[in-house]
Image (cartoon, rainbow, N blue to C red):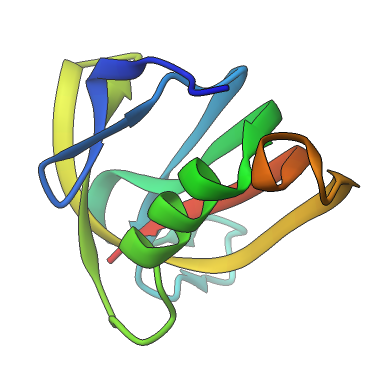
Length: 125
């Protein structure tokens, strides 16, 4: 069982399978604000639309393809390039890192290992 690689989602330029689901969280980074005596908050936005979380989920994936993805988002590499579909800008590439990965083993024999619920999140640098 091999999921087809995507034309959109890539890590370091390497196509990965289209996720079963993908969610995106974006936010503005602000310097610490100060509220004056009149109650008005004075803040400065440092960066707009930073990706706080690009979350990938795979319902079912083979050991081989999961290992390929894990090698690309390895904790041993501090940062990697992620190409994804952004809700504001369409296809976009950012520098990011991954801080958590989880999956459940479904069967160790089928397809030399079959996993369910693979999830990982990429956070923009």
